[in-house]
Length: 80
Length: 395
Image (cartoon, rainbow over all chains, first blue to last red; front, side, top):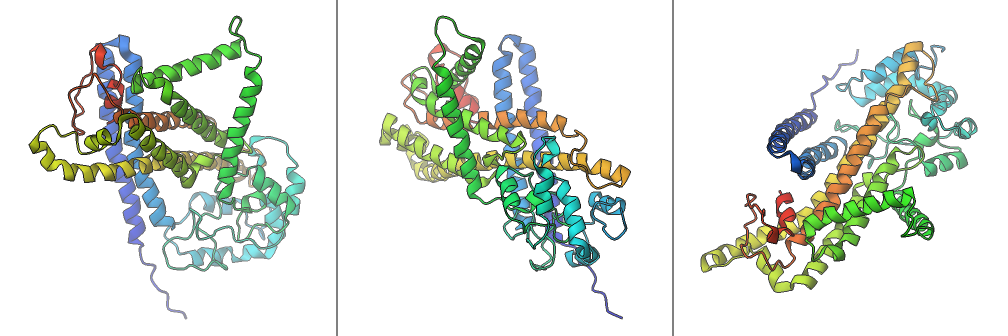
């Protein structure tokens, strides 16, 4: 009978997946704050809603980019 | 389905959805080993699971019938979905991690290549036909060039018929778009410089938007999903920004700005440190542009592939049949999301390119030099209208 080798946990993958979750948490909290302050500003001055919305979208894209960097790093770690 | 060919049978399809990430590859490969007995059936079955999930009736049947035999290692080392880090890097017979899901749906090149060559087949349960053709890197450049050429040629042919006195609906729509882009960049660059730089920023916007959206069209591929395409665009932006700002403001002003715009002796003490940081930032900003764009579009592509595959798998799981040519349209909301995010990414890329130019342009009205970590500058008065958008947007 063959001796079975225990399947070791690949901690690198676990770390990568957890880090991506952490990045998602950070970016979601930042995005929530950004959108919330944009909404407050729109409520105070509805006539410039378009400008505020544009600035909010741009800010959200910049914040989201950090999560994308984390995703790219995880893809590199996990698959290269 | 006979029990000899497990590909896309009920139990196998159930395994597809509940993949056991903890098990090593060789164990999975050993289980799938009996799938190699019937290359013909599983290649044919997976060959029908074709590129035409979007219900375009191609010569799908003959193409995939011919793509039936031969060996093709689809999972190369440089695939994004290669082996897990177990150290079992046997390309010869261990399947790659993602052999059950397609990486990217076929485009014109892979379709034609799989039609022409007959040695692309399903290996170890991998998908065959056009899915087994690994698109080469230069294909991204070819598609990008193709979109640029098509756009320029089509627009030139159409604009000849446009008139100023009686514009048609299409002309009004395009002019509205162009006017919107002009106003958008005027808020960033200021009235004095917008005419000079809106061709660059606007063309960048249109080109990136075309490239991004083409990933949603059935037989096309979005070149911006590949990092090096986005890096090429960002590299061009980098070079253009340096040349233009040095030409407009002069080297001293650029250097002064990169040192943090010191106005006193104390500030000059910190100038070397700030200069090093700003120099690093000058190189990192295009890199971030490229990563942001390529990461987003790559993620959109994968999301679309995942939902298309689910749409095809769910009927096959429910009825135990081979995956159908056309699946459920579960990817409909994903298309909307992809269109939205493609537009946003094109906007952000071109906007940030314009911002990097605007930051280093000479501002005659702008006497208070702002520090780079000072976001609170309100440029509410009209004299500071020009670069105000730049500093507000440069988070």
